[in-house]
Length: 371
Image (cartoon, rainbow, N blue to C red; front, side):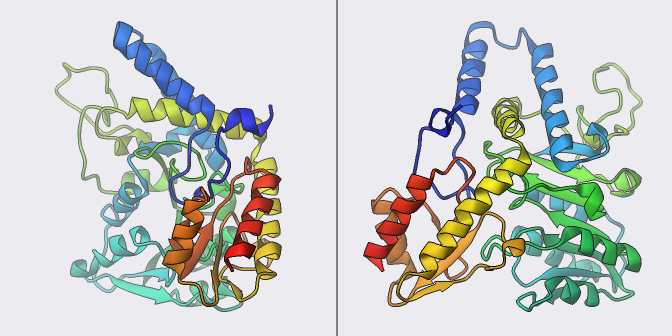
């Protein structure tokens, strides 16, 4: 169907922040609210079937071996914390990160310093960021934690190359996939990662409060648990049973009642992404980013802060204009209904597959007037 029937809005460039929902997600939540109003949880078994469909969609999106390898979590930060405070650290262990990480993928590792863990921050502004990260790994490095796409610059890294380097050195690879999942194809098996996580509220077009955590099967029981409750038990439906053990699947990381409202919205949004197909989504986003790159580069005083090589791009373009304060430019764009974000010393645009060519051209024309 035409994109205008899927999304009622036009000038939103915030897929890398908190993305708007498609119509079908809104409709699904409204129907779920009406059902709760009229019959409550009478049809709870159907809700569980929807939750299982969500797990299946997420497993396919990640190319996880099984739904048993994915957990539904509150957000990326929670999943990162499961890894950081689940591994058995020894004094002197190292975690390698980049110098461009979102705070969630920095603070959680710095919080391990009281355990004697050293955080090694690597400059990835050079021509070969993967080599810089791999070379920073020493015999003391236990884990490389990296974002697949950097939130401010939009730099996309080669995950399979990093995975191969980590495997060769016996280092665990942990990927914050929030800025790639839903914008570009992502494959936990091809990347060779130990862990991957993402929120649903960015490129996946879902609500805040629900994300996904992939944990490689052989590492599942190695992560020490810190959250316990009825839902994470192997025999979760047997409330009278006194003996218990954590679930053998990744459900062991889900301590309590599920976010069913969020699941309803996210499942609807993922259904749309699957119908379009991730290859087509990525192609459409790249076309929009390429046009924005060309158009903004032609503006007087424009400075592109995102990679220009297509292989390094995902869905983020950040730029600044000489003589224009970023805050003032942001407000001027907002006044004209162009919703974007201030990140990385500039203005960040993050169009999705549904962003029309007309919107792109109108935005470039507006920027030309504001430059």
